[in-house]
Length: 356
Image 1 (cartoon, rainbow, N blue to C red):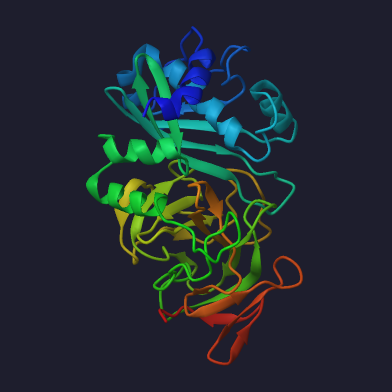
Image 2 (tube, helix red, strand yellow):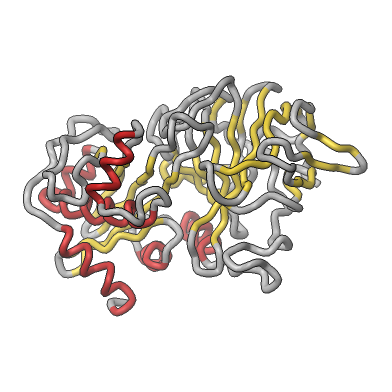
């Protein structure tokens, strides 16, 4: 295991610097003070739950540096830049890099990290669950979607049995042999995934397939109207990506898929929490806790999975059946439609959410 992590561990060891983050007074995550300029976490917004801060003690700084370095390596908008340059450029765009440490126990820590989306576009942020283990004094983090994360999930005391089973199934899913490189095959099982509201009730499709964050696969749909109540597409484990009160929730489902829900208001708070398909996540809204913008109340729903190399990705919708409707890309983002039993639903259409 150490050999597979040697490069990562070396980078983390080089990243560790002296000094402590400011104490955190709140039981829920609260911003901390700025890190020293030479630190990989310099300019990063750091949140640490009080119980985690107490348990980590002087190890907090090295942990945050290690996770920050990984985040800036994984981010599409930062990975080709040095940490200092990446954070500075994102800050010029009004975008934050956030590391939120929520739990710690012994040599383990877990939390959430994300890079805000541009507030000039209707895009979604990049975000990851993370687990980190301290080995011989060095923190080895794993971000959702990489091999270290899957390895940590298998043994970390911060991951419960039900969550471990769900995440492991998600992380280990293999691509269909007929898929294009880096994509999950179109035959991958999405049966049982609903659209993000109660079955056999309606919402209005306001945006056909489009990207989650402005680049990549057209993985996302927008919905509004109906009762306004947002529910998960299936049972699974849920995490509030922006923390308590934030409008972004991720649910990891059995069978290899996860779903994101953004712009919600009146949200429930989850932290690796087992939920049923009938759990209320929140209501449609215009929340931008992690960037982007919304012109009116809606839920931005996205389909996620891992490619054959275990890299997390927002996967394409074209040809997939979700909520009883088969979705197709249009000639431009947001313009695509869906079909069901001879009916066609394009943006502006009120549709039922069906199990099959």
